[in-house]
Structures are given as C-alpha cells and as structure tokens.
Image (cartoon, rainbow, N blue to C red; front, top):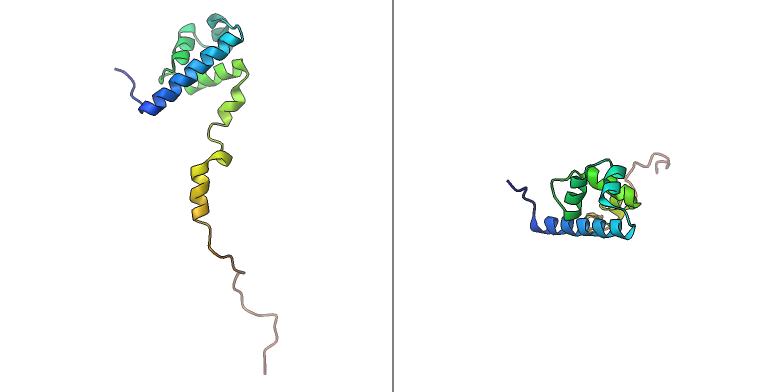
Length: 111
C-alpha cells in the first residue's frame, strides 16, 4: 500500500529530496558517509533523496545537519514570514483604540 499525501506535498518532498541529493554531491559526500554521519541506513538516504513521504522528519533533520543546513528547518514555518496569518491578524485589529473607561474618583464633586 502506497502512502498517500496531497499532490503538492509530494512535489515539495521530491524537490527537497532532489535538493538534498544535489547538496550532498556538491560536497562530495558519498551515500555511505552521509548515512554514517546522519545515523541512518544507506537505504534511508536513498528514500530521503527520492522525497519519500514515509521517511521520518527526524531523518531529514539529521541529513540537513550533516549538510550544514539545519537552521533552514527551523525557518520553515517562521511566524514572522506567515503572510496569511499576519493578514488574518491585521483584519482583527480594532478600528480605533480608546483609553480605558474609569470612574473619575480623583476629581472633586461639583456643587
């Protein structure tokens, strides 16, 4: 049984796998060395480089660490770059901001 994910997600994983493969080759790192450094099997490296959706995200993280690219994983869903979330938040901003209402205790009573 094949694991089903949305088509755009599959495309993104395949691109990620291809980019990991290219980064590994640019660094002249063999699959065997990558597997040893990442603490995974050679077949897992093969699956990751194909964008296999069943590979654990921890394995992807280990591979990115070996490539010196782990900081990018933390930036994937950076809230400062979440344009949709920021727009939704802006829509909920009040039209006006007023001073809080409070009783006038400090002022003397008028006679």
